[in-house]
Amino acid sequence: MKQSEIKELSTADLQENLVTLKKNYTDLKMAHAISPLENPIQLRALRKSVARIATELTKRDLQ
Image 1: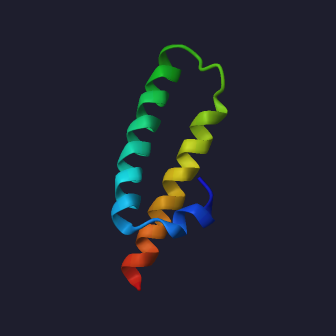
Image 2: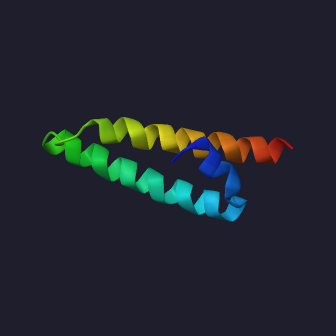
Image 3: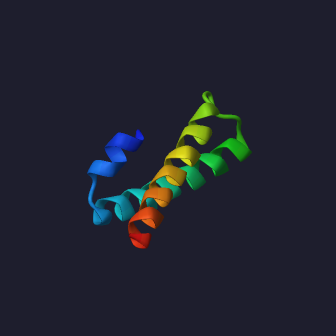
C-alpha cells in the first residue's frame, strides 16, 4: 500500500487495515518458519505496509 493511498483513508479504516495486515504478517511468518515461502519478499512488503499505516496513525494522533 502506497503512502498516497494511506493518506486518503479514514482513521477507522487505517486501524482496521492495521489489524488485518498484522494478522496476515504473523500468519505468513509462521508459515515461513515451517516451510519456506515461495516468495519471501511478501514478508518485507507486509512489514513495511504495517509500518506505514502505524506511522500515519501516530502522525494523526499528534495533530
